[in-house]
Image (spheres, protein in one colour):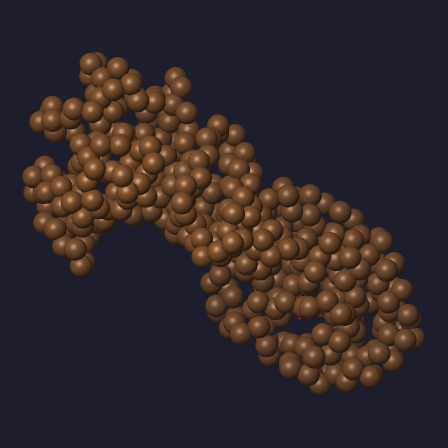
Length: 425
Ligand code: ATP
Ligand code: MG
């Protein structure tokens, strides 16, 4: 802050966490504004009369996420935005800013938020907004643009007047050119009911809808690459996912369970409170083989997994199943086979990756940080008892006949009853 700009300010009065303006420290702090977090809510603001319910849900999810950081936070809900403030208390500005950054990083994983901004919160005067804007553009180069808006229309200066005023002051302070069409730096000024937020840039959020808004589902989680991505995509559409993993135990070791556990723990940051159910599937696979599944072994296994998942869904209130199927990726995912899988259960099977290529799925897995875990070696139960040739056009009648021999529905009930529950939070 230049001495000249500081001298122009006429707005110091007992405002919040601002310290005594007559001391040098107080002046610097006040000019700096109070760092906070501003969340832009995406689609949910478009949802008309259900909007309040959605906003409450998102607020709860944000609060739960923030609790993980153990940073005390005050949450304020405004038109289409949520503001998170960390009380200054005895903290130095640097300590305070670090905590605010921690909160911003944590909430950027919460679905339903399109943008996470880190504004300076300043008193509600044009002068304060100018000072903050000058400070934020210190050290930037290239052209800039000021984007101003008022959530409080009673503010004495209109948005465009405010933008012009701030733009002129930034130019005077730093000598930067204005370019409204293609700026290198955008300075956002948002006038709220009680204060003004000034910020540049911001980080993209997860987008989507708050978890819980679309209900609950059981996500079938192998240790592979696809299923965690599928679960993530559905969480992002507002579904709370309960995870179900089938291990090959006792025919295999427990490695796949460790992977499923690690994956769910990683995905938990998007929804919180995750639960993983693990079912030892080896014996059931043997039973299917014994009842002559042969080339239909893989399909019969997948149907039994789905039936077991449906039993579990009933228990946890899930209204759908989620899988990582991608059309044509492997033999169990041809169109006739997908049709035969749908026939196994009456619940809808959601397949968010159906139209995705493997490279797209892998890129998303990298972004959500599940790829490295998925790539760890393990013995997947599906690779047990796999026939040399897998049927790509399974007939539903044949599958039903095999299932009739061992009462698959009853077996699914028994398998669900053996599920071990974990809470990898
Ligand atoms: P993934 O990478 O998710 O393992 P995949 O390409 O290996 O998928 P499949 O083995 O045919 O494909 O499995 C398709 C889907 O079936 C998986 O995405 C998952 O939803 C479910 N599934 C497969 N194996 C298991 C398992 N052991 N436990 C739970 N679900 C499974
Ligand atoms: Mg797999």
